Length: 294
Image 1 (cartoon, rainbow, N blue to C red):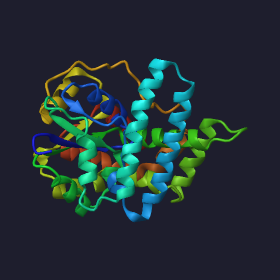
Image 2: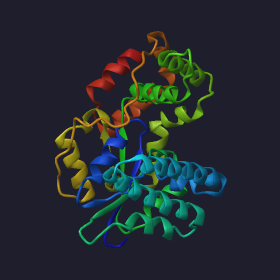
Image 3: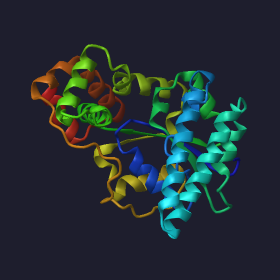
Image 4: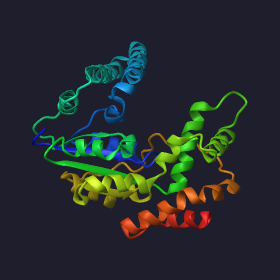
């Protein structure tokens, strides 16, 4: 690990982290696991480990079933993914108090030409300061990337994604997403609220991560060569052309009832203001939605 940069993608949820993960996976100087969102720092703890292992074993079983039905070329690709999931299950089962299983997993495919290894898990943006300190100190050169999306757009995309998981026969995605929006307002979707708290996340991060080790980028400008060139420069990588037409894990479209937007004003407006102070400017989309909220 001493000769590699260790990168953590901290989020935010629904802000382009899946696209960035694929971009870096395809970069010849990177060795990122195909498993996006390892959830090591939030789910390897005793409280959540057993449930996560069960989830991973289900993923492995699904991949095995697909491999048995696939043609030879696709089966070979799936078998590589199965091997990776099995290796990760072993890490999770070990507990890894000293993190060696985790770092060995990250570097297992990192040859001498690889400069960067890493883990992109948006939930890491929710970690407390002691956990962020442990992450910071895991390697001599540890860097953090945070992607930010307009707060209202991010919130609605998050709810649409969740609605897709929960929608039942006879329900539309829009109805379900708006129902989840109402639950959020009642305080019943705390996870979504926490993921909307840019101020809290960035305050904790900047309290323990030196600013020069943190790169913050806007989702609204991510899919440009200039943006990915800046990320590569920050991570010590050679620039590489991005596939900006690739869409990964986009939430299905659904309409937000316009009358509801005003109801999250107090929740979201402070984060527009905080990010503007931190970054010095906001993308046009942020200005547009801040006007909608005010």
